[in-house]
Image 1 (cartoon, rainbow, N blue to C red):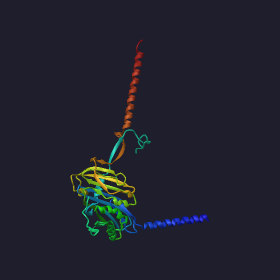
Image 2: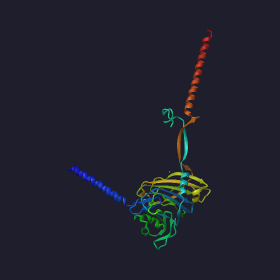
Image 3: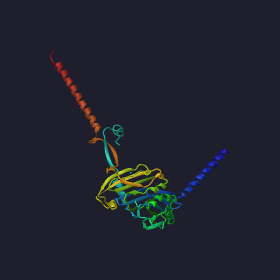
Image 4: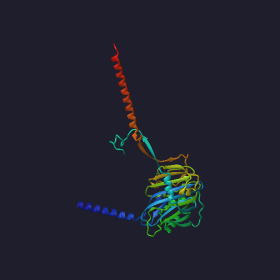
Amino acid sequence: MRDAQRLWRRALLVALALVALQLGSLVAPAYACGCGAMVAQSGRQLSVRQETSAVRWDGRSEQIVMRLTVDGNARRAAWIMPVPSRATVKLGDRRLFDELESLSAPVHRTRSYFWPRGGDWPLDGGRADGAGAPSAAAKPPVEVVGRQRLGPFDVARLTATDPTALRDWLARNGFQLPPALATELRPYVEQKWEYVAIRLAPEQPGQTLGGPLDPLSLTFASDRPVYPMRLSRLAKTPQTLNLYVLAAHRMETASTIGGGPPETLFAGRIAHPSGALGDLTGRPDAVYLTALTQFFGQPSLITGDHELHPSPDDTPFQRAWYTDELMTVGGIPAWLLTVGGVLLVLAVGGGLIIRVRRTRRTRGALTPS
C-alpha cells in the first residue's frame, strides 16, 4: 500500500512539473541587452545571444552602432534605448564589426625555450609534437518626433515627460514592455532624455527573428561619451558587454556600475582608417581604438549608465597568443649541441690530459738514473 502511494505521489509531481514547464514556455520573458530593453511578443521566446557596439565620440557628438544576435521563435519584438538628445537613426554597415575584430585581434608570437620539456625528445620517447537634451514639450506627455522603416526595424523617436505615459504609449503602439520599465525610465525622463523605440519584425511574412540582425546606427549630440546601461537591470540572465570605443585618446569607464572589472582587449592608434571604419570616423589621419569587455553576473546590481573618459595615458595594448618552441640550430636542438659540445670539450681535454701524463711517464722511463 505504501509503495503504491509513493508511486502515485511521484507521478503527480512529475505531472505538475510538466504542466509548470508548459506554462512557463507560454510566458515571454523580458531580456535586456547592453543599452536597451527587449521583449518578445506574447507567447513567444526571444533571447539576445550576443551584443556588440561601437561608440564614436569626437567631443561634440556621439554615434553608437549596435549589432544584436538573437535566438528564439518570436516573429515580433520590441527594444527601447534612451539617448541624451535628439537622435538620427540609420542602418549600420555590416562590415564594421569584422574590421574592428580584425584590428583588435590577438597577435601570434613565438617564445623559444632551451631545455626540453614534456613532448620533446628525449622526454617523449622519440615523438615530435575578447548632457542635456532639448526640453520636451509639456503637452502631450509623449511626442513622436520621427518614425521610419529601416530594413527589419520599425523605428520611432520619442520624447516623454512622464515614464508611465511613455510606457502606455509604447503598449498602444505594439511595444509591450514590462511594467517595471516605467521605474527604470524615470531617471531618463527627469534628465529630459529622449528614446529610440524600435519594433523588430522580419521583412518576410511568417519569418521568425533569429541570427545576427542588421546593425543600427544612432547619432546624437553629447559633450561627454556615455553608454546607456540602466535598463539592463531588468535582465534575468547574465550579460556580457562588448564595446569598441573610437576617440582621440585611449578610453576607460568611470566605474564598474555593478559589474565585473572591465577588461581591455585592445588599445592602439589606427592610422588612416578606411572601409566601414573610415566611414564611421570621417577618415581622419588617425583614431584611437579601445576595445573593452565586461561581464554582469547579476544585472540587477547595475547602478546606472557607463560614463567614458580618457585614460591617464595612451599606452597601447594588444593581446598575444604565444607558441613555445624548442630552440634549435639548423634543425638540431640547441641544448643537444651545447651538451654535446661540452662533452666533446671534456672528452678532448681528458684525452689531452691522458696523453700528457703518458708522455711524462714515457720520458721518465727513458731518463737514465
